[in-house]
Amino acid sequence: MLLDYRDVLIMKRVSQIDKVILVAGGKGGVGKSVVAATTALLLSKKFRTGLLDLDLHGPSSAAILGAENSPIEEADGIVPPTVDRLKLMSLDLLVKGRPIPLSGLSKQEVVKEIVALTDFGELDFLVVDLPPGSGDELLASIRIFRSKATTIIVTTPSALSSSFAERVITIMKSTSVPIFGIVENMSRKSDDSPTLELCQRTGVTFLGRLPFDEIIARAGNITRDQLISSRFALSLQSILNMTGLYR
Amino acid sequence: MYSWVMHEFLVAGGVVESLVKYVSESGRVVKSFRVVVGELSMLDIETLSNAIKTLITQTALRNAVFTVEVEPASIVCGTCLSKMSFNEAMAGLNTDAKEVIHFIPDLVGCYISCVKCGSVDLKVVSGRWVEVRDVVT
Image (cartoon, rainbow over all chains, first blue to last red):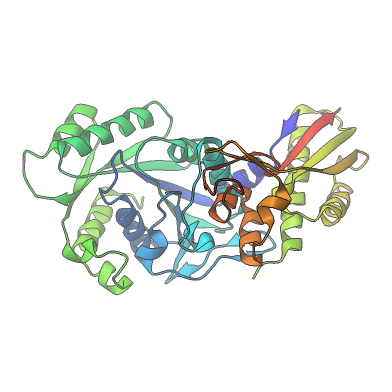
């Protein structure tokens, strides 16, 4: 018989979190990371919040939030650095800009290790930034966080983006993890948006639109104050206020 | 930045908690178990062993015998299929790199390349992490 000692550590970590928000979407470049980082930053103003960047090959949360400090080891694990009041864990805080070549099993191992080792402490919300698609990171996150998770799907107003988002929705519906809703990023405010059609087709709630924002287009090269005061962030705040995610 | 000894205690705690959970769920008495430590994790075997020994005295595992042994690391290049040993992989790495690999061994590919062809398409085949094996009840 074989026991994976990380399983008990993961159970302990997850038991300390009230709600996990998986930020997913089928296609790359739709703004998942900036939605995840801004959501986490907004939530951290009122709640104990962590952000876990599981976009293993393209971790961008640290750059978006201007975080540079490394995690620190304490008796109960690796303590993530704090950005304002937000606790952030990202592989980029460890490997500092190096490429991260990982395949199959290694990706699942890294996800398990990072969750087992990271000591976020007690949290009201953990926001998880996922990579595009439906690979190991998404599946491992579902397995680990299923008891506490809900999902926000990010898409853009394009048929291609909707098509890939629908594939993720199909996967999520096959699991016990609910989909909280769909956010349309880089929105044109058009009534014939494929996102609305996607919501009708799949029965998933349309949460709202986020405008294309020149400031956000420079994410990674702007301050947190610029990020949090952007039209994008204000729209996201409105969506979070209206949708009852806090309840 | 990091204290490696602290990490051994976290791992030891996880190992013992895993076994205690198994005992509690199965109702069995554990007579012996093996702790296999991947070479890439660079855990201090003596510290880990002593920590487990101390922790099990306070549990239902107090009479169990155990061994802690190292599993050699094997890393295979996906491009030329050459195998690399732990010593070949670690040669020339600085402390910062070793610390990251110590915590997350699969990140070894961020710091090394194939000694034969230079590719960073590397796969850790064995010796990555800690497992509790051969639990005898």
